[in-house]
Image (cartoon, rainbow over the protein chains, first blue to last red):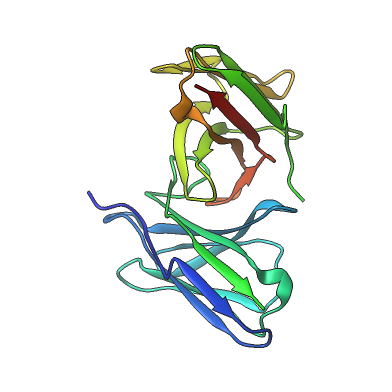
Length: 114
Length: 111
């Protein structure tokens, strides 16, 4: 079966702009989680969606938001980009939630803010 | 910041040798998982071990869990150059859908 697909793979944005990243989970998976990975902070949890509802949120400012559609595809949005938002953004899908079951990760979107 | 530490941070070995990575955490868990990441790409799930399990195997991988010491280890036997990657432990947070990752161990296997 097809894996988790993230688009785009690479993105360069300017400070102050906004960006939307997309994640298509594995068919049948209803949980999508998002993580930010940076060299300094490592892998940090952003939020998790299940059946279009945000079930959990990490410690990130309100500039980071997300949503999930009825087909389980998810998007995350970052507004008013800052240089520190440069990172690899990973999404993971799982059947019921990545905490208790195996999570399948996409290849990530590498965002560079200049 | 992340809750959990892995050591060593970096490990360099020759092909054929065994590699052991350790993970410690601070709070109780329901399960702990290990993931591999190749050079800034996505994470690949390796093994999930539940709190009532002490050891689990998958091919050349062996994971142990000691809940009394709040630690886990990943052993890769007979390593290959293709095992070169970063390895992360991740524990459940008690909150659905959230994994808490360690800082990772970067493994280099020299041919």
